[in-house]
Amino acid sequence: MQKQQIGRGIKAVVLILVIVGLSNIPVFAATPTLQQCDINNDGIINISDFIEMNKYIGTTGTAGWIKSDVDKNGVVQVCDMMFVANHYGETVNAIDNARIQKLSIAYSSVMDEPTNQEFIADHFDMLNCPVSYTADAASVKDLNPNIKVIGYYDSIMMSTTYSDWSVVSSHEDWFLHDTSGHRVQPSGYPTNYIMKPNTGWSSYFAQRCKTLLTSNPQFDGIFLDGVPTDLYEDGLIFTVPYTKIPTDVTTNWGTWMYNHIQNIKTTIGSHLLFPNAYKHMLYSQGISHIHFWENFIHGRSKAYNENGYGTDGWNYGLLAVDLLHDQAELGNIIAVNSGCADASAHPTQAKQWMLFTYACFSFAVVDLNKAYYSWQFYDSDSTHGYYSEMDMKLGQPVGDYYHVSGTAQVYARQFTNYYVAANMNLLGTGSVTFTINGVTKTLAPRTAVFIQK
Image (cartoon, rainbow, N blue to C red; front, top):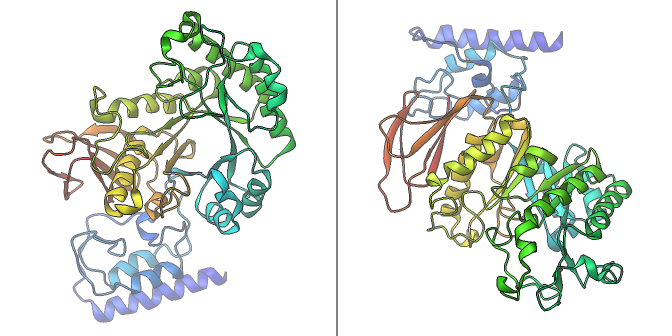
């Protein structure tokens, strides 16, 4: 009752101001939606929205230049408040207020710091962290019980630094050997060895995952790194040339890996399993129903002035979008990590890449609650993997992405609350000007824009 009285009081005050101060209020073609009246995007129409609007009363800009310009006539004025007052106390449909989920990848000792734990708990929906940081993962979970925590394991690498090295090392048949009978090491990892997924290693590793999840309920699942389907194509480099790798290994590796991941998933049951599988969708489609794509469109090793991944025969990156979209349509979870080399040294360009890769990922999503976007690793740049734009309430997708008529490589997608557009053309080409929903924008190559309705 008290809320209703407050709402009626606000409506009355606004109505008086309208009558007294504005005798020539224009007539608008369409009444603003409930989402448009939720000025601060918190899901409810209340006094906070009026406080936000009051900051801009009397200011002008292009139509809909700011959300406080509710009626999109270019002026923030009392009649905008009237529209909002008419919905005082109402809540926005959660479906229409949806956003893409946010994933934090926090490796190394950053998990030890309470301030980092708090930041992750406050800003993200999922955390991928080392399995060794059990207490820190539990702290994040205590701070945010709704966050999902997945522990990092590499499914085919074993290190002399691991606590169970002596146990694993006693099983010589578990190790991959070259044609000279020596254990095979990955290049750049002097303490690591490659394990064969078609040996007893698979059962041992699967049980290791199960033990972690059973003993540490703060973990909701496993992030599974090291899942190459084709050793050579997926870029694994060893300290010996491929001519020293037995041919039966390179021939059968894909089948071995599929069975290995199937064994892991069967063993851990209903817990989440995130295979870092690049373009290979067979694990998601047939086993995990979750797919993770590292270096999506533009990865952490790509400079701000490089086009990024998926531009060589990949239709400017749209093939990657389509592969993920196919999995999303099956109801599977899709997740990506994008980034930019030396991001803190080039903050403006890095943010442009974040927005571009975020837009590309939005083209792939079907269910926003099953879509996780991550930027950089937590400690790799000053953003800690978070920009406020990641909290945009896009709302539900309305149809698939489409080519914007009359443009070269500009694609767009409509959501309940936004239009998202991206210029997929390569760097060095010209900017493109186009109009969507009555709003004209100019986009440079490999940039994106989010147009609020």
